[in-house]
Length: 510
Ligand SMILES: Nc1ncnc2c1ncn2[C@@H]1O[C@H](COP(=O)(O)OP(=O)(O)OP(=O)(O)O)[C@@H](O)[C@H]1O
Image 1: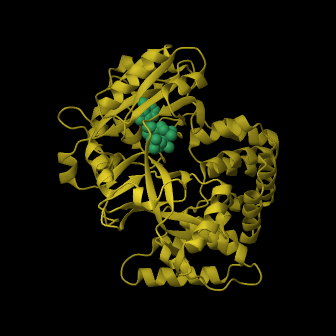
Image 2: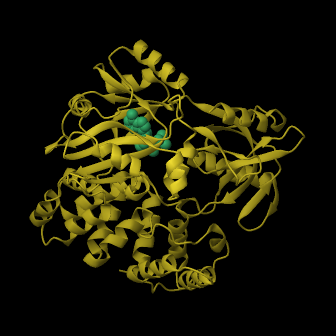
């Protein structure tokens, strides 16, 4: 299949708001793809490359060669080119990578360049697209969407499922191929995800009047552990195998009284008083293989769900039954309250936050485990932090945001008339906001290097974020986690925006 086909579909999907129309477009291109191209086509449509890391940076995308007039690139060729780039190592590799990238981009038409740039930068990646893609696979293979979704959560891989369904000669065979996927101890399933609510009452109202489980939300690393006798595997949220880096978790799982297990939980570093250390210290611990660090900062696994225990598959069992199975193992659990009373739940939330935890996840007590879905049965609630910051610069958008000024650079006042950059965000913007800010930042423009537009620091923006972390990337030594735009504030002058001192105080307190 030509890359041009995928690029055209990607643009058409972005251009329509109708889910049905998007699904039909995706199904059409999947139907036309050769079975051997299906895995790559599926990935590209979800906005991802197959290669986790290509080594290509933003900088290499800033100056692209002129586009080709006619499409010639095949999907297989492009995948092979990224594979080569990802595999380059040692001296000269970055020059060679840039050379390969230039050659690839020079062979691409303007639409294909847009797609490639979005894939490399990650700006095209969207969870929602993945769900839509699964429905499109169902449509293309003429099988029920539930069959595809279930297979995807059990294999953890859209491309495997797309290949199985679309590689079958007819709908019956496709259905049989999908039904053959089952929960297998040793094969990670996609974790169930949560929706968000702004407070506990709203979360409970969305779940109905029945009892809920209010789980402490620990701020660590999602882990899914699989055990078959002494063989223990630990997987991350994105289903990467973390086993060799976390011997202490393997040991803790081996100590549990069951020979086959699949458990879901969170691993974090806790201090002597049992309080969680800042998230980045936990993250640093899992990112390193260094034995010394591993010896000093032990991770503690806390489990909040059981998907399989000793031959019993529990995916479809109600949460309360899964928790009973978990408790029976005597594993370290997550502190939780089971209640139907909103006031009691609110008190519990307050005490959890006071104890230094991130928030709670409110869960429907009777719901099954909806693997791979941001289902309605789990709702997370965190105390919301906001800051009023000043926009210092803005980067051009790409992909769906081509032609707009998208990624804003955020600054806090330094107290001496200047600003300190705290990070960037392109999240939380509606189409209206984007259109507005594209006009607004042109008005404030002082320089434009072709990629980034520097502006007069006058526009105040209200930013929501999940926390403050230490950072060597930004000059203030701190950065915001998950910054997103709440709204632009025209009622507040930049001279009254929040200061770096306020942000540092938040960092010290978190
Ligand atoms: N008790 C708990 N139950 C479920 N998830 C929990 C719990 N404690 C911590 N978590 C973490 O919270 C996440 C649930 O939120 P969500 O599904 O939105 O994931 P996320 O996108 O990684 O969000 P976040 O950044 O807020 O953790 C899980 O992925 C898990 O890592």
